[in-house]
Image 1 (cartoon, rainbow, N blue to C red):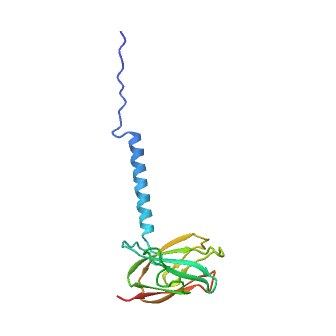
Image 2: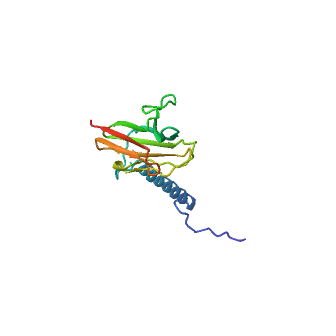
Image 3: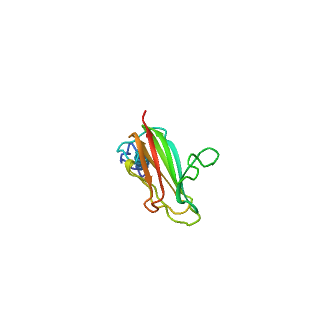
Length: 165
């Protein structure tokens, strides 16, 4: 009669597969937190701001009579907003607001790239081709009136007024 030997190898409290699963979950959670904090940090400050942003939509376009212009797009029923095609679009926001600036190039006439810059709030979009868009968040933390402009088309300009509280 042959005796069976008992397996004396100790079993681990947590299996290797469980450890790998936990490592993946921790890495994914860490990456998500890192992404959330980076996307919550406005362009002009070094800390995250957790607030509901004020959405501003600006459209870059070309008008045969005025040339290249910025227009403010209203979120109500897809109609043009305050500027309505005026070459010097102005925006008003309250001081302390988190602003989410959405810029889109809608120049189908010439297909020229466009950009938007607000130096005082460190807002600088990429050069956007036709129907490309970019969103930049910034904190309107300084009362006053500031210019925004295009590096590509000098005639494109507007102003943003941060109203004191």
